[in-house]
Image 1 (spheres, rainbow, N blue to C red):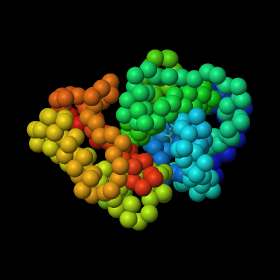
Image 2 (cartoon, protein in one colour; image 1 turned 135 degrees about the vertical axis):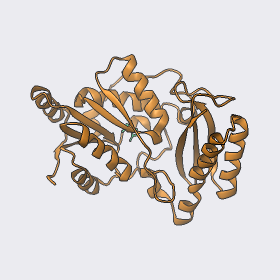
Image 3 (tube, rainbow, N blue to C red; image 1 turned 60 degrees about the vertical axis):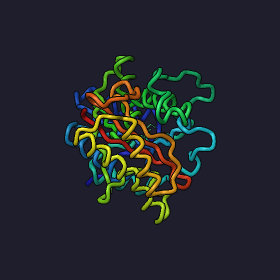
Length: 284
Ligand code: PAF
C-alpha cells in the first residue's frame, strides 16, 4: 500500500496527466470534496480495477455553496482521507487550494439549463452551476479516461452526463451504486453532523424510499399517491423539514404523474440543520 502522491497545484496535476497520456495509460478519476467514507472508497476501488492509474481530487468547492450553507464548517479531514485513498489504491491525490482553482476575476461558468433548476436546484440556486463549472475544470486538469460518480447525487450525475455529452468532453462518466450503512442510511460526508437521535431520524429517508420501491414493484403507478405516502413516513419517523419529495423521469428529471419507464423517487429532508438527500430508481 504505497502512499499516493499529493499534487497541490494545477501544474503538478497537468504533469501527472501528461505522463499518463504519453505512456498511453488509462486514468480513472474520482472527484470529491474530502471527508471520505465507504461510498468514496467504493468509487476509488472501482476506478482502481478499471484503469492503469487512479487520481482522487479533494477540493471543497466554494462556488457550489450558497450563502448560509456549510462551506466554512464542511468537514476537512485530509490525513484520514489520505489513508483511505492509499487503502483503496489511489496513485495520486489532487489537493489544490481555492486560489489555485479560481482566479480572482473568474467569470466563466458552465450551466446545464433546466436540469440544474429542479429538485435540489430549487432550494440551492447556483449550486449546480458551481458543480458543473468545477467538474469541467477538474476534467480539463486531470484529463481522465473515466470519471466515477455516485448515484446518491442523482441530479448531479445527470447534469454531469449531460454536460459531458453537450460539450464533447472526452471522458466516460461511470455511475456507481449508492453505498448504504447496514441500517440503510445512504453514506454521506454530512452524516457526520448528525447527533445520535438525529441519526435515528435520518433513516426516514431510506424507509420512505424503500416503501415506494416496494409499492412500484407491487404494481402501484400513481406518483402523487406514493409521494403522499413517503411524506407520511418521513413525518411519522422524524421531525425533519421536507425540502422536496418527487418522482421524476430519470433522464429529464421532469415530474411524472404515472410511473412508466425509468423513474427516480428522490427527496431532500432537513434533519436539524443537516440537509440530507437520497433516491431510488424505479422501473415502471
Ligand atoms: O459530489 C461532490 O463531492 C462534489 O459535488 C464534486 C463532484 C466533487 C464537485 O465539487
